[in-house]
Length: 123
Image (tube, rainbow, N blue to C red; front, side, top):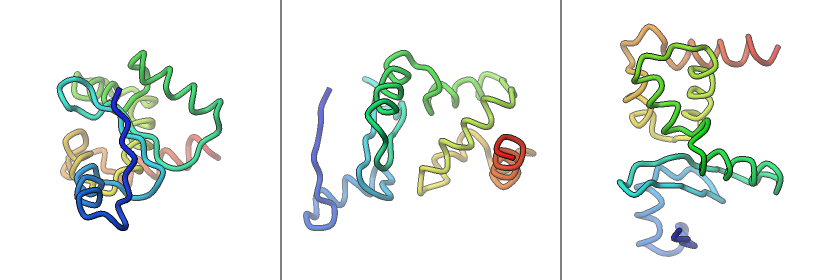
């Protein structure tokens, strides 16, 4: 594992790397596989317990952005997959990254998923 501590607000090279990862805030942890594909990211502060749970999921390939994206591409239209994928896409500032999974001409637009996710699961 490689850990980089960036200062994107004051160092030009750090700023360029931060932008290339579609960073929107700090702290930002981005996990990549050996092919350079993003597995998942953790944006913002989370508790130690939640962090350990997320790291375990990343290690096991469970409920990560990459695993959910691959499930969707493989044809899964399970509401849990779509809901979790919608949540993951909210932490990316560049929606083009998520458009690979849910193109804008898809029947399942981000607006519909966002509405569905927030109304059906949280109310």
